[in-house]
Image (tube, rainbow, N blue to C red; front, side, top):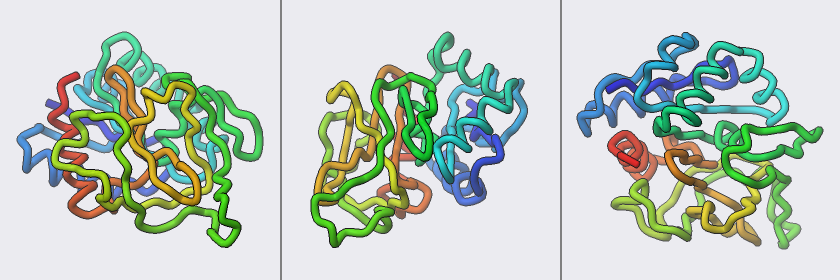
Length: 212
């Protein structure tokens, strides 16, 4: 069993690598590697796409690494390999991003990535820090997780999902902010599971043992 964390030069992958390796060892999920090798991405059993920064820059970097991009798309769309997008990696699953400019996403989960606009003007954007999950749709990734559990967020834009059934969890920030999305073999987490202590580690372990 091989899990590939895709390195397309958009983010610090060290903490994610350590968290996934720790949980893979704990749940018996095999090897975890950070890779920029398209051949490794192509043969991986599971794929993780992190992302830090702005949507257009991350989208351009990902598509600029054509070998990795093509291998990832084939693995997910054709082979049905389990996939997890984290932070901007989740946002890239959308139809369109609206940060700075209108930018096409992967189109794997319908919807747009739009700026967070809290109803309470005193709340700051970016949405930064710990917030309580509200689970909307049961999913194996939430095994051992309950509404009210905390995760760590750092973002100014969020995923406005077209199909409410594909929004698996949200948080309240003077309005709903999407936290987890998913359909078929795909999952996305807006928060950083590797920085969310035992709750995030549990969800990483659940992803590594998920058999959609």
